[in-house]
Every structure is written in C-alpha cells, then in structure tokens.
Image 1 (cartoon, rainbow, N blue to C red):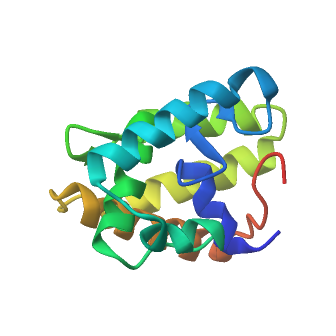
Image 2 (image 1 turned 60 degrees about the vertical axis):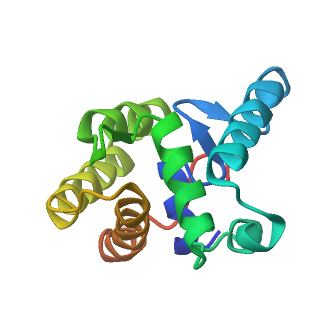
Length: 148
C-alpha cells in the first residue's frame, strides 16, 4: 500500500468516521450515510471525487470540501481546527497493538498540528492536513494504513 494512502487514516476514504471501516459489513450502512451526507453538504459530483477513487488528495474545491466533511465526521476537524485529540483517538483504534506505529502516528499528528495551526478555512485545512500526513508518513516510515 502506498504512502499516499496514509492520508486515509485521517478519514478521507478508508476511515470515514472514528473507528468505522467500510469493509466491516455492519458499518457499511453508516459509512454510506456519512458519505451521502457529505456529498449533499458539499454538492460534490462524481468528477469531484476522482481523487478519492484513486486514493489521492482531491484537487477540485468540492472534492477538498468533501474531504473536510469526512474529516469532521471522523472527529479530526472540530470547530474549523485540527483536533489532535480526535486524530489520536482514531490512531489509537488502529495502532494500539503496535507501539512502533502508534509512536509514528503521534509524530505525524504533532507535526501536522503545528503545520495547520493557522488555517481557519475547513476545505483548505483538510487539504493542508492531507498533504502534511502524506509527507510526514514518508519521513517517519509509516507506509501502510490499518486494514491495508
């Protein structure tokens, strides 16, 4: 699995809500509801979501806002700010049994918190956060996401 997919840890596609994975049958309906809610809120269309399908950071404004909506649902963005606590909870759900990866995840969270601290617009915040996660994951060697 590519490093680009590390951004999925932050709620972009594989993880849409803290601890819910799309591959868990009992959660698929909830994931679909979240996805539909964000599609409706952002008025995103199929063309805006091509990046998601390719496991890439979207480049259209609606795609970026869709990513922000998913991050809000995951508890990673709260009140137009990055939530270190939300990201930590999400990482803990997946890496609790792997201290090395949990340490790497914490390092990413700390670095990205500093990187996006001044951003106040949610769609830009989500984009900056996604790019930061990819870059920091490469630096610390976190090259896979849970369930991958």
